[in-house]
Length: 123
Image 1: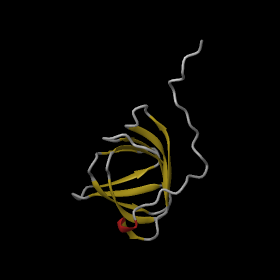
Image 2: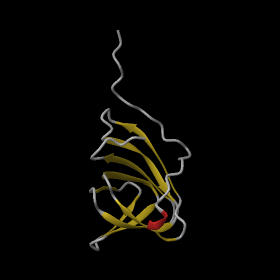
Image 3: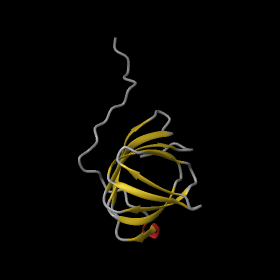
Image 4: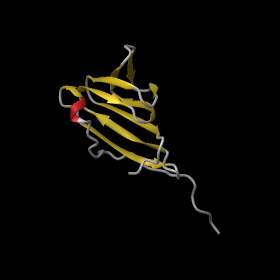
């Protein structure tokens, strides 16, 4: 008898559904964000997926811990305290929960993300 599979798999969709940025956070341009959560732990505290965004500048406040790997494009991210980081394809980063950041996306950026939420993240 076969047991229930423990490994979740998913394929990145060629087109991601809209995952809009809060309009109050947009500072310049009309950045269009799309994304999808594709896998989750059983307790829904750990989630992963893909996200992309077109050119623009916006604020982002992390309400969860997030690890990212940039797949395409680049982004310059300024921490509220002043430190600036430019991430390009192949770069990874961790954003702690509660961090306020300011994103400058010069052209489309695409990332893989893993989120750790304090409460179950319901899709």
